[in-house]
Length: 116
Image 1 (cartoon, one colour):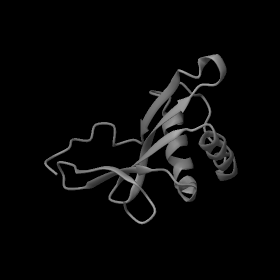
Image 2 (spheres, one colour):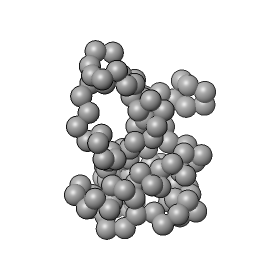
Image 3 (cartoon, rainbow, N blue to C red):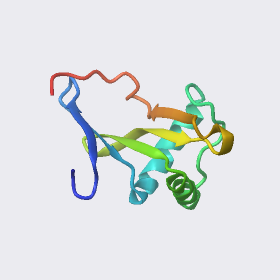
Image 4 (tube, rainbow, N blue to C red):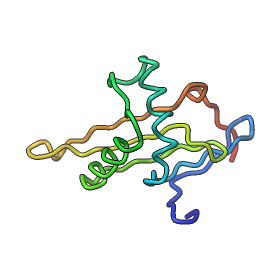
């Protein structure tokens, strides 16, 4: 645990930078919006065509997903938020299924890990 965050994993990249995978918090949303939108704008990996227009939209998205038991893991390199992964359960008759998504902002898609 780091402060009020649960650290899911921690490792070093081959170039010495440290990666921490931990939970996304609401106070991370101002940093999340430009990262998320940058990946959407690349148009290569996401099945989404629109991003989050502002922090207020991100807060509503986050609060709705937290209430629906979403799991969100943030990826940080040397403290900088660079991406994330989410598991969002479906509702109703499809509640036994979930959406899984993962994204990393440019220049991080091909990171190489080294010994921890």
